[in-house]
Amino acid sequence: MGGLVYQNIGPRLAYLRRQAGLTQSQLAERLGVRSYQTIQKWEKGERTLTYRYMVKIARALGHAVKREKDVIPLFFPPAAATEVDPVLLLGALFLRGNLENLLQGSNRIEADNLR
Image (cartoon, rainbow, N blue to C red; front, side, top):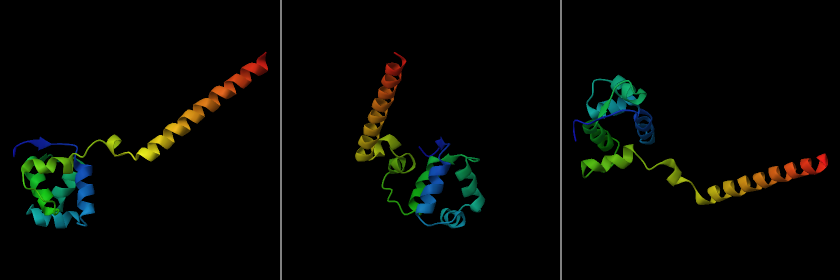
């Protein structure tokens, strides 16, 4: 698994780093990479990130990584749709239904006025 390369996870890396309260320089120092510019390039997607470094980053950010596969949910969380508050979802569906009813009602009123 160490040789796998992952792209397009830069924004997630930046988010995790900020959540840990670290600057790019501090994370670079913890990882033993040359400079903050390596972190910057990972975050911007200008440089690919290997699975090996994902494991190192997770540990450097304070996440318990017992097995290498433990980093997958950290870098690839479940889709946002599964994180929607059910009350908000019901409210949105309710409002949508009422809006559709209002629009259908206004169409009926316009049709009645044409007769």
